[in-house]
Length: 214
Image (cartoon, rainbow, N blue to C red; front, side, top):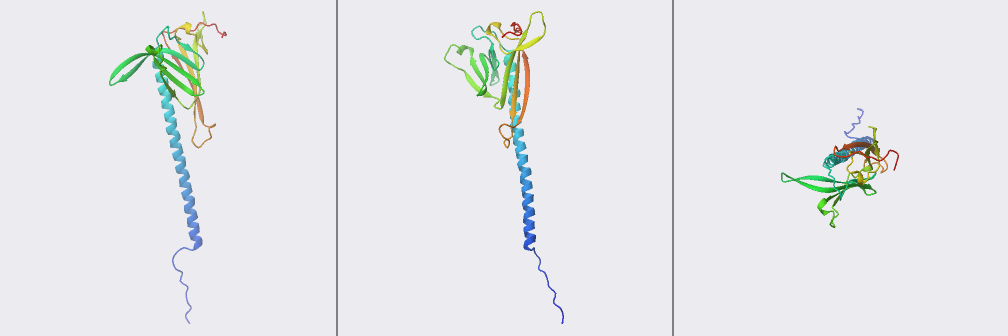
């Protein structure tokens, strides 16, 4: 009698199918994790690039405004630690032509953030408040200092205020801090860095307040 041979049909057993599904699921989870990390990094880089571009634009604008400062007795330069105002000539380009507008510019940092107010000098005596714009939303610190120098001493030191009767300052130093956080991070975390920059105006004068006096 010829013994019968069991022939196994092709295919997967239930256990093999479950193992295949598990492996495919793990691979899908790994791929989604990598993709999510790449998307998060791209968003963070894009947001950081936007903040840094706005910071460079702020430095460039302020340097041009400071260089074009003008003395104006009805709107003299005045400065505090978180706020300063000055008269300057703003140059705006439209349709290939440049238009110069003497204006009063005010930078102020408070709980709302950093704002810039621009008012034409011809409108100072009217009811116009000028245009107000919030800049650098991620700003966490904004400190303004003014250049002083004692008589018979060449060393420059920085004070936290500037009285209007001292005319235009020779130098201004601005220190600010930015905080750029990832969307997946908590609000109190993130990468923070500080930067300081000095602006000098040859037409200005050194502060004459004696060092150590308020």
